[in-house]
Amino acid sequence: GSAQLVEGFYKLNLRPYLEAIENSITTHLFSDDDRERYEVEFDFEGLLRADMKSRFDGYRVAVTSGLMTPNEARALEWLPAVAGGDKLFMQGAMLPIDKVGIAPTTPQPGEGNDSGT
Image (tube, rainbow, N blue to C red):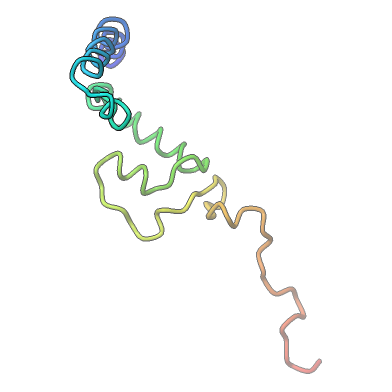
């Protein structure tokens, strides 16, 4: 589709020129001190963004596999953070990553029964 054409054009045609321009800016416009503090890099995130369904599927996989927090995914879409969205989750019961593998503490039959029997 068109997304693959744009990505191919970027990788095979634009990228080598852009890297040369980045290097030229760094070499010719920055002082020695500036080169240590700053980095020049073109941002083509908007151009290379996948369609909405592909992006959201990627976020879903990243969030449910503990690679990205919900708030990190929201930030990539310019959405505000939500309460509790800075925890990593794992697929399954969607537990916070620090709770995975911990047995639930539910009372067993006969425990916590103060009936005196």
